[in-house]
Image (cartoon, rainbow, N blue to C red):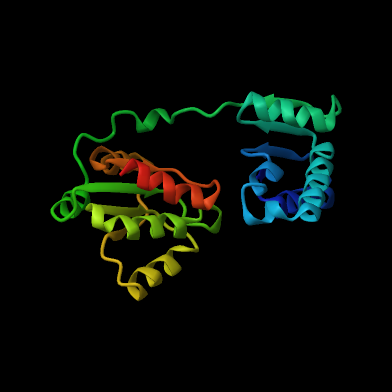
Length: 211
């Protein structure tokens, strides 16, 4: 099984399936080329054409494709026709996360002593999330009594921390990864809860409008 987006992972999945002579399941969370088009690479026509070609090739060589939305399933069906079975497995809430928090996390209370408004991002700190843009927006919004809290881990977290130290940003905080059921305690005390992966500059203006 190989999960997309991340075309290199799909290619590894296809290679391993051929080596082991096993069937290949492609789990689609986002259409790769559509996701890529929201980044700076989307401005390179040749790269987009090449990625779309590779994406179609992978889909056509799968034994089964699962999608998280009907729109994805319809988009893939246009690429592969009826040659490959496609199953829609919609996103849903984890029942274990229901009513898991009744108290606000202590760190939120601590930040609230200095700042009137708090934004929280919880998730993997990756280049795909472009959290540097969110950090830049928070820096600009310090004059509005706003603070930003990053919860989680990932390969860009170290650089984010270094940037906070280098630029002497006082209103950005970090917390180590926590189990999913504990995320609700951060959400309870947040004024804004961020999810992010789209065009970077849009979040700077959006954050200013929210504040």
